[in-house]
Picture 1 (cartoon, one colour):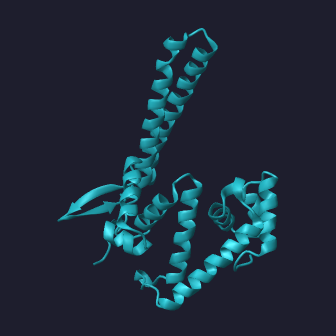
Picture 2 (picture 1 turned 90 degrees about the vertical axis):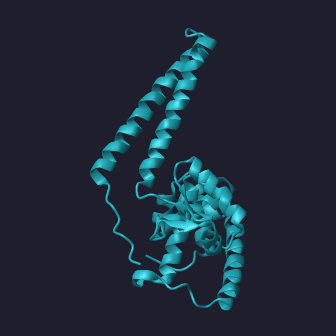
Picture 3 (picture 1 turned 90 degrees about the horizontal axis):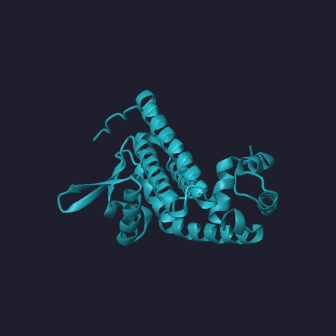
Length: 240
């Protein structure tokens, strides 16, 4: 499997694959590249609709130039615990963030969630996040507020400052929040049935929507509970 940066020709093949309606995985197979490489490339350069090969190539060259200048100012990467390779950790965090963005998480929220998830403690303060991501505390605060509304992050008071925490069962909490949101939408759809009339096309559509969403919500909640009971493992305590 080839490594290194995507070539301009490969970017043109990605653009053609998107125009043909191919999935990221299929485009990646044609290029003999990881699916995450294609996902990251498209997400960072306009998405599946706005992706343009030549524009993406120029933008990548510009970003590479800026990173090179930044690296020359700070050549020593942050030391990693457990003997991890700092370069590999950095590359994986970028992939993880990109996939979160591709799933619908806004960019800054994805960066904060990735930083929290990939920290061994599973928790960081606003100052630590701001320093790690090189963004303002206000940006961190806004991102955390969004993630908290999605049940992905919780706050803990630590003296005069707050610490943001990602629990070990983060996915379970997210799935249960999704099930609750879906159930609420089902109930709202059902409330519209008598308003439009059960025998009317709109009323019938709303009732059908409510039944469908009820089934999906119950299925998500049941599957999430079963998965946690069967698959959940507790992470070992982080050494001091």
